[in-house]
Image (cartoon, rainbow, N blue to C red; front, side, top):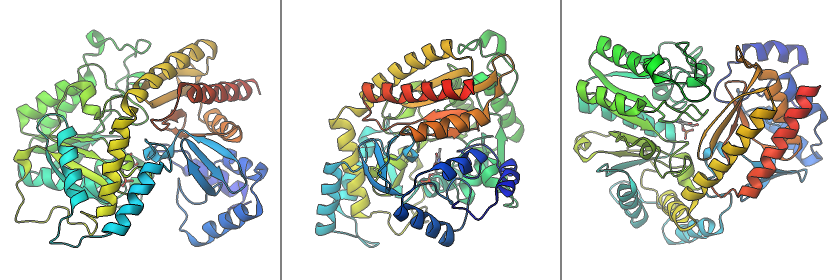
Length: 471
Ligand SMILES: Cc1ncc(COP(=O)(O)O)c(C=O)c1O
């Protein structure tokens, strides 16, 4: 046992857990896994100390194993167990411990490790130039922050300043960061509960989620019939914007990393509403930008130009924290005010890491690999769906893939307990991923994953499904 809780306490606590962003670290399956887990002495000791010194929180502490080495798609723990990492916090696009990145960071530390305010530096400028050249359309002004949540705050502040309005519209069930800005526009009780009043004017609507359409329409086996549903999710967004009036920004992940993929035409319709109403469109591409979905920016998939894009996570190559906000040149309007001004805004080491990460993504053709291996995975998963009634739905774009487990295909009852058990069985067999919304096996491997590795992972999942559904 590595937690302070008895199992009856855990059962009670897990009932309070709000399924959303990830799996609970207090579920009974988690406890069982821990009890049967063969953590070594070094591992057990560190887990105990982690448990002792860190504030306990959902999704993080207590932990279940200790990372000793990461390389490519692999995480190895102190007990010598190796896991293919199909989660990686979406930070490991180029694979772990990429030698070119490690060398670039080491060299940068020797050359110039920091630049205080009033000074710029070559890596920061080169990165700004590179991102503005890469970003779609004329979005070519950037600002860096040390994490996604901070970058989301910068985007929200800029939208307020640019429009003279303060309201936002975002989706229930969304996640945009753990700071107060991200909390307010986010839609997950896991983060919002007990936090008191959110930012006023943070309005929410139900998300696009065709398989589980909040408006009750049938997803028509993955091909929503827009003649029937009339894209109510987009219409409701327009309706709320019209009622609220004076909305500064719509903020959303263009593809929610569950994943939820919008129905065809959704973002074009929302872009139009935003244009009509003088509202900015902010795309949070923190987990899915930089190639995950099979295009460098997610917005390219929908041929829609946001006013502001936020990227992060993988930008630091799975080694360092850095995020960026990219905006239209007309939004460069706050020269007499501080918008970000974070201590490490132009840190030469983090910016060198980001620059090198983008180079690696380009040189190794990782965006194309994500597209090709992602399509292969979807094909295989759809075959698996034919064989296993527990798979209610398969969704994905590039290497952001979800397998929705249901106890009954007709009423789509989420099979959350089985999903949790499948996850732990996969972990036993060397594959790590997270569940989202309780019952969706969410696979987000690094962009370097090969077709063979993907097949290996899908075999592990299929075997786990077979065992867990026959018990
Ligand atoms: C969609 C989305 N937005 C924002 C964030 C926050 O980023 P960070 O954890 O770097 O603050 C995350 C992190 O998981 C995310 O998935």
